[in-house]
Length: 204
Image (cartoon, rainbow, N blue to C red):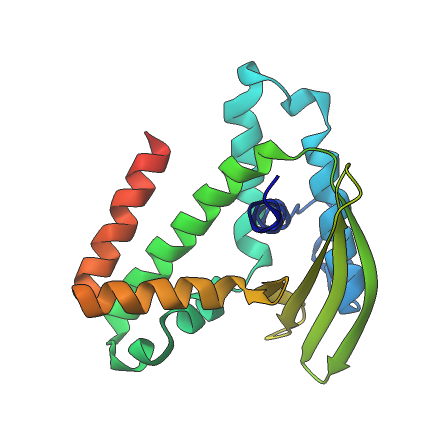
């Protein structure tokens, strides 16, 4: 399996954060927050109540409800647009955050279902006030190792992820390069329309 494809899918697994532990449990150290995330995602994926085609709708509903509260999608959207963000008015920013969040959530819910018993191993963290880096690696069934780093911050009382670096490639940086190219070829409005079309295709 392609390493980047696998890593991106695993990032999508980790977008599905459960609310079952409660917000207070997530408010500790960054590594604890990520570890609880990984453990709960695996728990959902292996729960017989949500397995099989017959339970797809309920499974995706649970995963979708879990995604939004645990990631800073505003920060992710802003970083994905880069300098273009500063040129937008409040209404345009709000629209982009909404559609980008919807796109990431839908992508995560679908990709998470390709989980194949990969394991996440924690390798340490660095904390600087309200910023943190959690290092780890993905271990496949074939014993391949993929380096992955989570970038988190604490805008309030909870640690929230806003980017991932997989084998040296930034998850949000990859989107930023694509978005800048599309904006140059078309416009910001064209970019939003393109994302909406991709989202519609995923839902069809």
